[in-house]
Image (cartoon, rainbow, N blue to C red; front, side, top):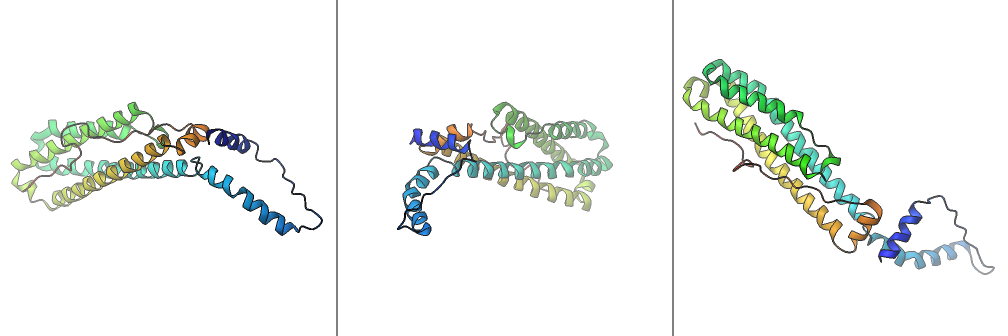
Length: 225
C-alpha cells in the first residue's frame, strides 16, 4: 500500500502524461472504456485509502472551526471598549482595573494565529495566554461593578454584559468544535492507511488543540446581581 501511494504521488507530479487506448478490431471504444474502468476500480479504491481526500478534508474542517474561534474572540474584543467607557462613567476609582483590561485587550488583539500556524504549539500557546489574560481582566472588571448600584442598573451596562456573556458562551462552543475537528484530523494523519498519504502527499503535521491557560479560563465570566 505504501509503495502504491508513492507511485500515485509521482504520477500526480506529472499530470500531463498522455494516455492512449488502443481499440481492437472487434472491440468498440465504449466497450474498451468500460473494461478499463472495471480494471481501474481497485486502484481507485486504493488511492482513496491513501488519505488523498480524507486528509485535506479533515484539515480544512479544522481550519474552518479555528476561523470561528477567531471571529468570536474578535467579537468579544469589539465589546470591551464600550464596556470600559460605561464602567468608567460610574467607577472612575477603578482606573487600575480599567487600564488592565484595556492593555490586555490590546495584547490579545495583537497576537494572531493563522490557519497555517495551527501546527505550531508555541504560537497557539501565545494566543491562548493572551486571551486567557483578557478573560481574567474582564472577570475582575465585572466583579468590581458590585460596589456600584447605579452602574449595575444602567441599561447600557446590562446590555453590554448580556452581549459579553453570550459571546463568551459562543467562544466556548467554537473552541469545543475546533478541538473535536483537530482530534479528528490528528487521528486521520496518524492511522493506517491515511497516515501513508498524509506523509507522502501532504507532509501533514499534527494540529494543536486549544486549552484553557488558567483555572476556569474556559468559562464565561459572569456576575450575579
